[in-house]
Image (cartoon, rainbow, N blue to C red; front, side, top):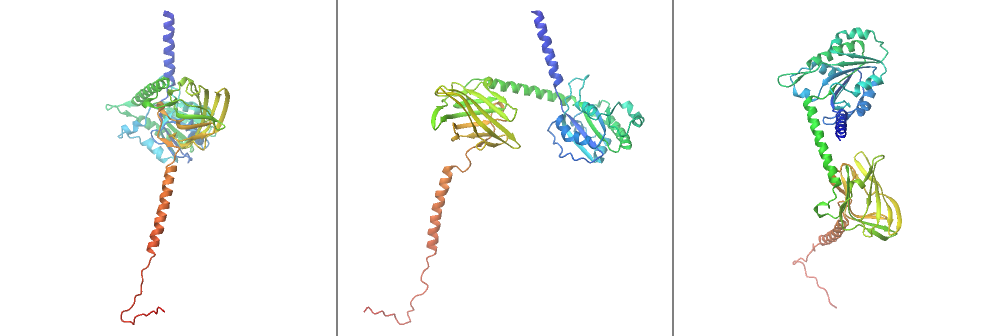
Length: 442
């Protein structure tokens, strides 16, 4: 028994260490190039780019314009380092950014670093070393003085990658980090590169963010883990729906669907209908596929009036600012007959992204008719729907009937007013001084 417990403890430690090593913390990335390169719009603060996005949007374009790359690596760096210490003079970094034909500042980039001080895995370093297929020159602060001599031994027509490890930032009395020694090295290396390689690209990043940012992100991730546990507990909860709602609720991950009324027909003959029931479909019975679009599949057991058991499949897709339904299908046995059908629903359900779709009137898909449904395949957190996009527009049939009736009455009133206004009084009368008009009656 003791050996089993010892093995379990070792296994837990191994899993914990693996989780820590897989943790990635975003760091800033500065890019400047002596050549003008069209790199599109810069990324706003608050958005973290994956390394694959950086590679496609920036690095691949820069590699086609230059064979010489210089990567400056700080031990710890965050975009807050520049805002927290406005008195810090980083004149060399500012000069190269302002004087370069192309300069980009990415506040937050995930480079897939390992959370280990002794073993760092910066994906940017590995990519530059493997993709350029040239000479790789690692440099420490002590090697910078000998950089011109080392460059003279290189072939100018071959790709070169300079990996410059900057000195660790010192922490002052006010807990601010001093990056001026690193700035001096950036200035010296940039000056040497400019004199030997007119066309070169330089990058500045770090292995890890600074400690307070890293701790804050770790706390945020721990909070997100508790939220995911809360979501899982909600998905596994089989209690009735809140607020006295009747119907069935399907919720798993970021997908949610609520059906209050549903009828199943075949050749205009009603086969079955949803019970007046309040139930959540267990998350273990729900299947979600994300291969091409999103496909939601779940069984309907003990929820239909005639006891039929069917499986419903609904496919969704999204692009740009909208999501839409591709198809709704049911399969199973209803009243002893096998049913397997699918219907296109793209015309009926086409919704702006980050909104749910709701419909309380009859939504007819030939064999399946919903009379109360709300669905959100994307970003439905904890089975909470976003603001709904209703199937009934602003002008409902009763509103149209009222407007048309009012329009007819207004038209009649308008015609009557025109008729009254067109009546003219007599503009000529008898003059009393004139002889009277005599009309013989014979």
